Length: 174
Image (cartoon, rainbow, N blue to C red):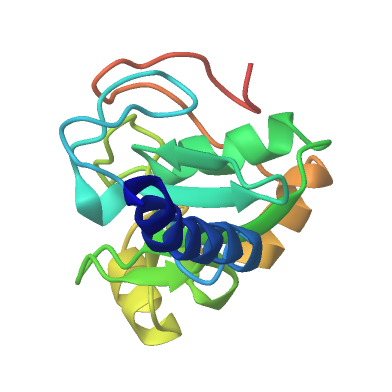
């Protein structure tokens, strides 16, 4: 009698869990990957990600999260791994630390910007904020994320590395 009661109690729970697993298994790319600051490491340099305002990340179509301590590193990593399909890319607004879809962000490339890996690349939510960040800086550039990636792919743009907390590599991404 106890065995029948156990089966009647456990069986519906197991079936419910099985249904949940079957229905809820699809990965959502509508939110950025979760970064645990001070714990998670950069996919490019393996250093701990500490500065939220400069962190960036993306999901691959296979459901893998790539996380970076410096936006310039993510851009170079994406450029250096063209076979990796990106489902969604995310950047932080440097001023507010809010996540933005990379395609909606404005990118500032400015040697005067101090970023974790010394790339001088940062993102903001509006073109006005980007122009303000670039104002008066020789050689500063303001681009959309998509335009930056196109220029990098075409060889018209370089992202410097170095001067940050590790300074590895240089140029177009080793």
